[in-house]
Amino acid sequence: MPNDSTQSPPDRRPLIAFVWLWVGVPLAYGLYELVRKATQLFTG
Amino acid sequence: MSPPVASPGWSRWLVPPAALSVHLSIGQAYAWSVFKPPLESALDLSGTQSALPFQVAIVMLGLSAAFGGTLVERNGPRWAMTVALVCFSSGFLISALGAATQQYWLIVLGYGFVGGVGLGIGYISPVSTLIKWFPDRPGMATGIAIMGFGGGALIASPLSAQMLESFGSDSSGIALAFLVHGVTYAVFMALGVLLVRVPRGEKPVEGGPSAVDGVQVSARDAVRTPQFWCLWVVLCMNVTAGIGILEKAAPMITDFFADSSTPVSVSAAAGFVALLSAANMAGRIGWSSASDLIGRKNMYRVYLGAGALMYALIALFGDSSKPLFILCALVILSFYGGGFATVPAYLKDLFGTHQVGAIHGRLLTAWSTAGVLGPLIVNWIADRQEEAGKHGASLYGLSFVIMIGLLAVGFVANELVRPVHPSRHIPAPRKETADAERQHSKPA
Image (cartoon, rainbow over all chains, first blue to last red; front, top):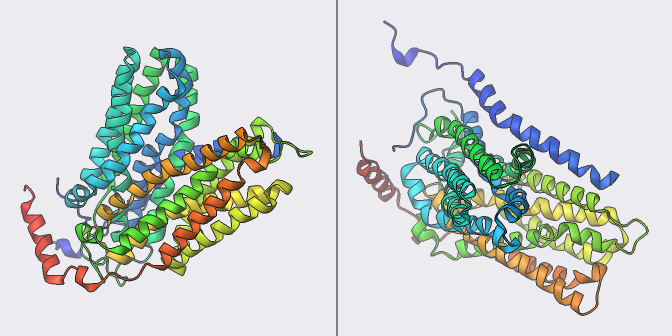
């Protein structure tokens, strides 16, 4: 029976990608809206 | 609730998204103005009345961060994020009931008092944990979280406006929008609650620096040191100077170039305000990360010294060059954001990681003070100048001179910051005992 301490830890990369997307997508939407509004300074 | 300890192999890059899920949510507070016009027409309120929930929320933010900091340290980040989730979302749900029944006091109670507690506890909840996970880059780590607070309004503002357009701006439409906000933010913040972990052991990265090396000072002792109060003055002055621009950005740029050949339109002024928000956010992550390289004291020398120079440039040449005016304002706002984001790492340098979240909470009273001081100075002076028959850029000249003076005061306070006297340090055995007692006093 393998010892717990010798087992390699699970691969966290899919979880890392998911959680960064969870916060990144709304932030990207906010930044997109911000850029849209900010361009009015040069076009308005 | 016991602090959740990371299992072996848990990545520290899972912690910033946990912090961001909370800060991006509570940053909605800065988008409250979207609800003001519909509330005023639906419930027959004045502008002052409709601003009340936001003002109460900001006061509660300062109070709960100052008085709840020790509880956050004692119970850990998951407890704090849960409290923030429950309070912030309940605030919206109570407000929804208030709008549906046309009982405005329920909106003040819900969004202002209950939601405000969520803001304060949520704001400080990840700070200590992030610093412990990133002892090599504390400025960058807290910069990511505190950037989220700036980013929250960017998400909420267009989203809330779209909801009100879809649901209607009458009381039932506002109630439905509040309800959707409450539920959505609860789900979004839940990720932070589930994800947050405190590092296992003292070294979160193998071969990296320890999270608990060096000076350790308790929150109770920290507020009795001159270093704490010097930093309080530094933060207060830096925030006041930033708010000086932020508060009147749109009318300011319009007034500055009213008599020029290229006056600024209303939509262009709105674009300027949006650009300032971007600079504020960029400063939070950018300058705070830079502080890991050049040191906290040097970074504040830049914020306060170069900030004063930017104000001087605007006062002297701002009305003759639009690009110069815009550039200086953007730099000032980036310093404003950077000042917020760098201060937790500065506290960590001075007082250690032991109770840095609680100390940060107490320091945020400087923000509340600046929130009153900044707008008061700029608005009061602009009104007096207008009464005296002045117009255009001359409405703001005196305010800018005062801002330069305040930044100079902050600069001196920063120069006075010295390492904390050893008599305030927690002796290693005493700290271990205190930690052990704290662990034992927790329910199993």
